[in-house]
View 1 (cartoon, rainbow, N blue to C red):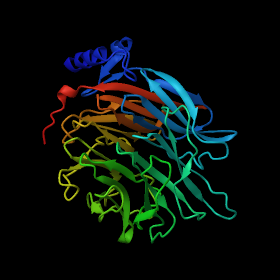
View 2: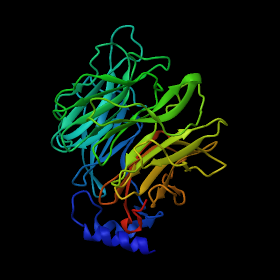
View 3: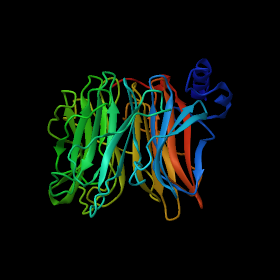
Length: 424
């Protein structure tokens, strides 16, 4: 009860600030182990067309951006919405005609930096005879997502191959960093993980270089910047014998080079295909690294794990298992970390007839997680994601299917920052 009152007081004190919840919504809050949520999610779009997994990002002012791919009869497009308080204030189409996403099975990339807002996606490369060929694009907006510059192509090889499953992040110094899966110079795994950066706020992209040639070909890599400015990338690496475990690597020179991959945990998960399940990686302000991932280890039992490192990835803690049920299967983990160390993890829970989106929260820097809270209400809900603002504001989004319609939802809440220990 105390945390509800604390959250209500925080929200009341911030009334009128751009992007924060209005005081009228305080009565609708319900507690979830340190996070007070609005009981009613906001429906962003409801359509018979296909919707991709969503992407969320706060900017420095607390304005929330929500991006997704949308496929209608006329083709696929990249959409971006601004969420102010509990309302959608604007929706823009990001791509130009004929340059929409090649598929809608993954989310766009979204980042906010000194130069503005950045959105990424892969568009089809229509070279005759090329299968699954795509080109990776990044586009910048300097007016909070209302209009966009001309897109810039990220891959510099000119080859009709796959350049996709990207992540993007931006830093206050103005650099923009991109990592993705690429069909060139691949080794036995089927894909390499490539990297490039922009040092002119997205105006141009420097040369591409390979971080690893043995990446799982559809498990999206993820980027994160540590408090000391070092850049990290996490991905699912393919080892000998089709072992597919999670690794991280560091760049101490603003993305000019990366050091050796460091194994997060030796799961020894052998899988002869690509699982489409990449990791999550984030830092708190004390420098602790958090990595979340899916694995089946050696007994083929699905698990969602979170481990932390306080020594720059040289060692990791024994992981915490997020999934506790014996009657459902977990999938598609996403994680966000507040600077003070609160962790919000969301994922799917599957049974024979249902697919639900759920959440658990850690208020002690990843050592333990609170009880499970269900987010969705439909019989089929999937692709949850989460973002956290410095103020403790949390945004959650997912897709619900109620035949024949597909619906994109976003829900917001406030962390009880007084409950975060901030201790190692």
